[in-house]
Length: 267
Image (tube, rainbow, N blue to C red):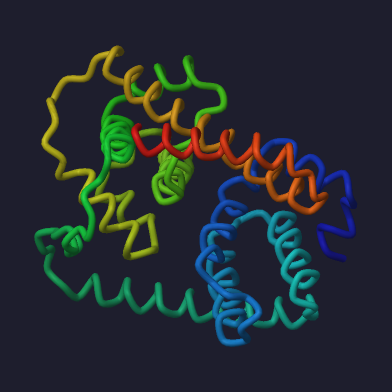
């Protein structure tokens, strides 16, 4: 009998209540945001990616939750998903064994960071603040204390930085807050996120941190996050007013959307 059947719905409620699905749930949303899941090729690629990522989930209850989610969304058999997962599990285990054998046969070599690709666009002030904050979080426990004490509902503006933040939180939990940054780079699987970590590591920044510095980063990022949330709400209200044919409300909301968009652009 599966853990799901044995423990029932209460196990899932407890799992979600304790927030343990946050990292993987965010990963699922992050991987699918640029995909067209009505396209069979992209849909199959997404399922393959999620099944590979499930190899990192140690809780059988949690895995069962995501098997059910995938099966329900894409009308698949849970048994077939589990068969694919088991195949990936054995392939991964065999690969790790092979890598260990190769490692024992080699002399220690100097570690090199992954190649950093040239940045295509210049970060704005908000993105710079996100990068600098992550750099501080990578290296200073004081930054974590200030952040946890001062920002209950903090969220990075850009998804890639929020993803790094969630991954680093998980990494800290796995390493008792003592893992070096090169180990974190190994912990992260996505090449674009690995490169982003290196870019953040290479920032020119003081070797000392102050509470005011961290508070300034948090304030700058939070203010833009609030504006973005308000803009999203107004855009949804605009869509609803358009559906109802409420011309007066449409005019009011259009002005508000333009003003919020202008404020965001100037941040």
